[in-house]
Amino acid sequence: MWVTLSVLILSLLGNLYFFVNRSAKLKNHSDDLLQKLTPQEQKIVHYILLDKSNKEIASALFVSLSTVKTHINNLYKKLDISSREEIILLFQK
Image (cartoon, rainbow, N blue to C red; front, side, top):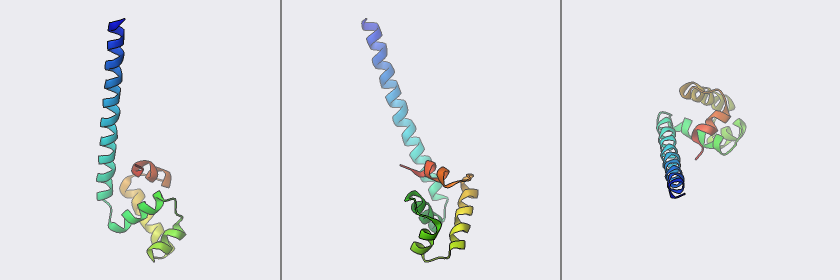
């Protein structure tokens, strides 16, 4: 019984360590990706994370709608993704 309990406790501690370590690595990865973006692209990511539409982003940044679309397309290429949902998955904290 003690052996089983010890193995269970070690397993739980190992899993906790794994998840904490993985979480830290994912945060570092998203920070690294964010640093590769221009300041304007970082702002676009911020507004996408706030679930703003392209029109709302354009209004907030005082740029045209086509400029926002261009920035988003550039984001997709730089991050090798194809949707806003993927941006949210990459950068949500």
